[in-house]
Length: 434
Image (cartoon, rainbow, N blue to C red; front, side, top):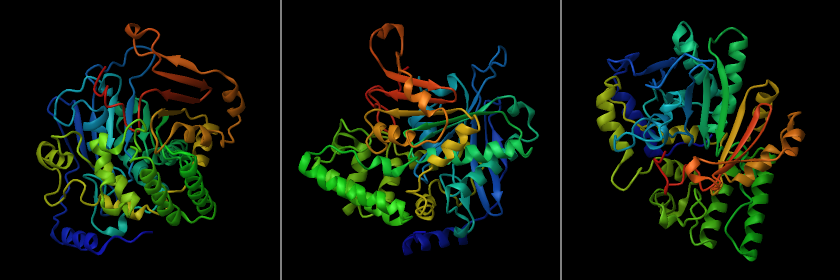
């Protein structure tokens, strides 16, 4: 476990000494379209959640209306903020209606996971989780308290959709949910998991770059060092070697944007916030910085969450600030950062849980080629048949006939989407479009 800096530790102690931990369980809008609240998943560990009900919801017809549980990456990045206001929620970061909100197709449940992320908090630093499995246990506890005894929620199948490091959380909590349901401890319909540009197998994401032959040779040497460290269980060492690899690729590629390899970092204000960090000494913190950057030139997500959103919610404890403990969350999970979760995906498939994988083709940090590589490491009995079928081209609308937007390959309960023109998060040239 990486230790937090002295400054962070002092800030944490000062925060805890001033806190008044009177936590209201839940609240919501008068029309019932939104609910939010806290669940104490362990003594003195509080997880924040926010549910939106779709105006298009209907329970008529053969297919029940679904609920999507969105899990953000990082670890330590806030789904309540990033996934909600920057990606799929009903409002964008300017609090304007989003045309492409997923609320058109499902109810949306955002959670600040793990505890310490976003509005979630712990009253003692030692209560922060140190593994993906521990995070899954907390999240399953939250779902038990939300779903058990609530028949209305139980009617809607739950799909876990994750991005980046959130994919590791999705794989581990997917297993925890399945086991809890089977044991009669959790009452919900589990629809499956979707892993978007997910950090499932870090070693498979180290062989890609924008380099010439000479630089590629040196890059490959560093990549092999990372793979050997992972094989030896040296996960902390491999994380910092990965940071050295990123530095090398940046220096030899005129600062490629790791979240869209068609861009330079200078072309993307979000990526620029990462690459200009002094020395990029700690790549994990740099990644957190990226995810916590401004949504646009005129919107500061931290000011949004600690201002208008905090005022709307009304139940955030007086001295809890959004994102206050997020760096600590990352530090405590540092030993799990480079651990693969292929085994967990394999187990989900063997249990006949639906697993959807989707990847933006111009993502570099979790590149599609790396995702294809870890899928080939699955021991799932259906893999050979999956490999032998052809992909199906995908189109967005009849107006774009002939313009391919992606590909799909699907066999039994494994579904793989190749999304053309998209990076780690989205293609910002088409952001917020239908």
